[in-house]
Structures are given as C-alpha cells and as structure tokens.
Image (cartoon, rainbow, N blue to C red; front, top):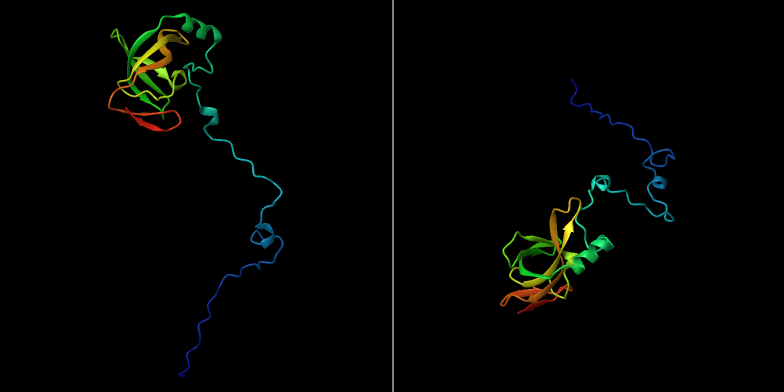
Length: 158
C-alpha cells in the first residue's frame, strides 16, 4: 500500500458556451428592441364584468331625466354615503323606505355625511321601474359638529 491517496475526480455536466448564437442565454437574445412599445395584456376579467343596471346621470335617458325634473321635491336625511363606493341612502322625512342615491346625482360642493338634511327628486330604476332612486340631491343643512369634505378633498369642520 502506498501512502499517496488517489485524487477523486468530480464529474460536472457540460454546459454550452454562452457565445452560441442559438442559445437562449446568449447576450444578443436578452435585450428587448428599443423601438417597439409593449402592449398591455387585456384584463382577464374584462369579459366577465356586468354593467351596472342603475342609471347614473351620464346614462339616464332624456325622458327619464325630464320626468324626474317635473316631479315634486322631497326632503329627508342622509342615512349613509360612501364616497369610495359611489353611493349611499337617504331616509325620507315622511318615514318611508330608504332611497338609493348615486354619487353623480349629488349637487353642490360637499360630500353628504350621515345626518345632513337634503332635498331631492325621485326617478324610477329600470328594468322593472319598481324601485326609485334620488336625483338632484341638494344638501340644505349640514349636520352640526361634523367634518365635511368637499369634492376637491378639503376637510371643513362645521
């Protein structure tokens, strides 16, 4: 036996050289062309979105707007309103059911908050015209002691 040990040789897989023109790792294939703009991929939910059945001021027909404008003016109190959701509910002064209000139908410079006194007209909601929504909503009295926000984002204490 000899005192010298035999070195163990490691076997490594052979990798292709980086300079091969057909290699996907070659430097030529890594850069994107600079003269082309990338198009955005379409949203996967685009075909699944359901249009809202509620008529906003933008998509309400002229005849529905005319009928609402001719109708009587009602008064009530803002029950709740979410600026981020874009809608809220009003409680009529006569004590009926709550009435839906869309953000596009609020007139004036302030975002309604709970407790604000408002005046409004009503418009039927398609397709069956069984429910109503408030249109031409005006805040008549701001709730005292609450903070009100303008549509521009400024907060005002009353």
